Image (cartoon, rainbow, N blue to C red; front, top):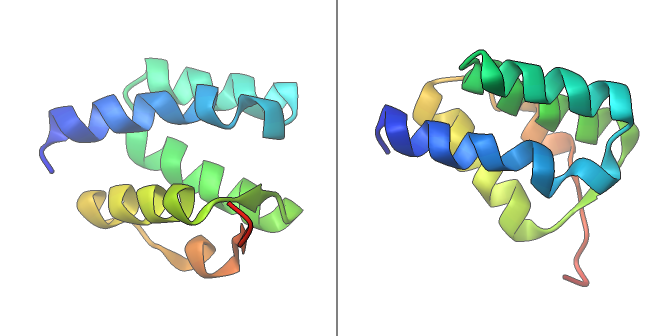
Length: 87
């Protein structure tokens, strides 16, 4: 995954999770996207979802994992995500 693919995929995350985040956190994530901070956006989103026990699908978990791996970012929050097995 090259930097353009990373940016394209990470830029979709705030809208994808918008209904599961508080408005202030969503605003922060969108600011990170606008600033090109895709690594910080992805890890902050994963950590926020994990801390709050927000359900994610297996596909969403895998996308977060793939992006963090591609950017060489820590993946610790992924193990703490609440994966909804019904999706």
